[in-house]
Length: 340
Image 1: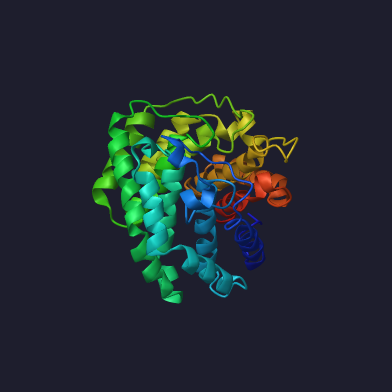
Image 2 (image 1 turned 90 degrees about the horizontal axis):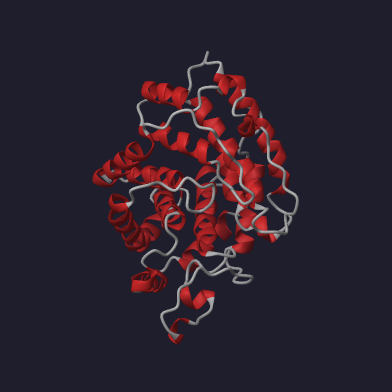
């Protein structure tokens, strides 16, 4: 695979994120009002995650810059990254985010996409590699811990009563949320939380066979079928996963379902929903690269998936920047795709 995350890519994506993390407007609030007191602007409601057009994009924008800082400690943007995190990850600001989440009518706020990205951000802050090069990470970790605890508790409350998964390719996709949450649980040795996530994934997806992959829909940025497979790659032992994958998508070697191997067309990148499709090309590449790596070297499915990675990446990378509807979030998915 020729395209990888390089220092040049990292600098480009870091600059994009730094330009929007503290950009308050335009802003798309996901906000319930219990009364006139709840009529406030983004920064008053969310003292950390007020930028990047919406809350969850701001969360994973912080994940992005800290992830790039870990991968490339000498990044030219490193000083700016540390400064913006130091400014925003304070006890007072965390208390403000917690106060918003504590309101009864915000119990389901950002479920499950924002929940999962918040845990991914927490895992990134707690990365030992980041701590080795940036001692500030210990302070960030201590300050941020109460926010992560809230979302662990919300997952633990919600998953046992969630009889059915959501298989859409948008923010409500449960396979994506469980994937990020599972990485968090394993990194932090949250064993009971990990067990809940694994048991839920098995309950929802273990018996799935012959996926038809009726996708994409017009506003998807995740492939429901590939994302499910990527979750099960995390959940199942290697040999069991290879067998499960063969039952779930039995004709991959023949490039079927064909829709999974053809980059999608994006007709209007100023339309926020249509612009999601650039993200679909990137997230498909992420899943395809990861799934290919989970298969035996001589598996006939491997080269098919690897070829699809390259074509999806080439179709999307040049469009990570250009219009704010995409550039406030696409850098994150570009990084996932380039280093899976």
